[in-house]
Image 1 (tube, helix red, strand yellow):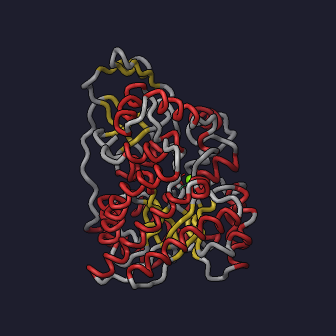
Image 2 (tube, protein in one colour):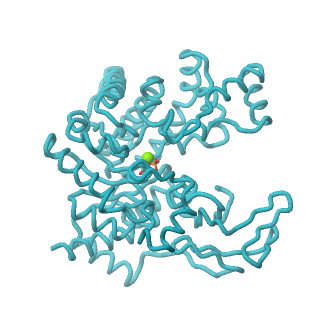
Length: 436
Ligand code: PEP
Ligand code: MG
C-alpha cells in the first residue's frame, strides 16, 4: 500500500482496514469492487468487457467508487483563497470540534494543515507493520512465555516512544488520543511458509515449532477474537510497554518543547466495565512507576472506545472508569448489525439496489438503530460523569449526514482521516445552522 498510487480491491468494504488505512494515508482506495476479476498469474485485471495488463492506466474516484479507464489528470488539493475563507466561516459557526485519525507525524501534519484540532484516534497497530518492527511483533505474538514476550516488547519500546514523540511534536498542545493495541492478531501472523521460515530463523526457533504456534493462533472469527482490550487483559505487558512509551514520550516533549501535553490513553473493544478496570489498573500502575522514576507528574486521561453493543448498553457503568468515550462506529455497526466489515460490500450493494438500505451503514451511520446505541450511551455516560469527553472516531466521523447526527446527540468532536477534515469542518457548521 505504501508503494501504491491507488488501491482497488475485489473484496472488502468502506471500513475494511485497507480502506481505513488508505484513507489515513490520503491514498485513493476503492475497496470491495466485486466486478473486478484479478488474474494474479497472468497479471491482468478484467472489468466487464475490458482487460488491463500490468502497466495500463486506470483512475480511481475513492469518494464515488468509480473506476475509470485511462489516466485522469489531478491536482493536489490546497486550502487557499475562497476555499480557505469558507472554511474560516465554517469554523466560526460550528460547535463540534474536528480531530483526525492519524498514526504518524506525516499524516498528523497533513491534518493540522487541513485544520484538525487534535488526534481522535492513533491506531498503534499501524506502527508495527514497518519492515524492521514486524519481526519483533511477530516474535511477541508467538512467544511461549511472558519473559520472551517482554524481551520482544523491550525491542519495540524505543520505536513506540519515538513514534509518539513525533506525533506530539507535530500536534503541539492539541489533544492526542492514543489507542492501545487492537489488531486481530491474524493481521500480524505470517501466512506463507517462506515467511514462517524467515521468522523461525529470526527468532532462532525450529520452523516446526513456529508453524505449530501460528496454527494454534488461528481464529475462525478474528474480528471477534483475541483483539482489543482482550490483548491487554491476557498480556498486560503489552499495555505496560505502550503506556510507558506514551508517557515517556510526553515527558520528553514537554521538557524539550515546553508543550503542555495531556495524553489521552484509549482502551479498545471494551464490553464490560470490569475489562476497563483491569486494563486501566495496568496503565495507571505503569504511569505511576514512570512518574516516580522520572520525578515528574502531570495529568493524563484514560478512556475507552464504545464499539461493542454491550458497552453502549452499560455506558453508565463504564463511565465510572472512563474519562472519555470515543464511539467506534465501524465495529459498533459491524456488531450491531451483525454485518462483517470486510465481507459484506457485495451484499450491501445489492441491498441498496433493491431499496432495502438507503445508505451503506458503514458509510453513513444508521441513525435509527446504531445511532440509538450511541445516543443512549451519551446520555448514560453523562449521567454518571457529567464532564465526560465524547467523540466519534469511526469512519462516520467524516460523513456529513453522520456529522449532523453527532452534533444533535451532543458529541464534542468528530475525528476523521486527514483528507476529510475540511468536509467535516463544513458539515459541522451546516449541522450547527440546521439544528439551531
Ligand atoms: C471503529 O471500530 O469504529 C474504530 C475506529 O476502530 P477500528 O476501525 O480500528 O476497528
Ligand atoms: Mg474498532
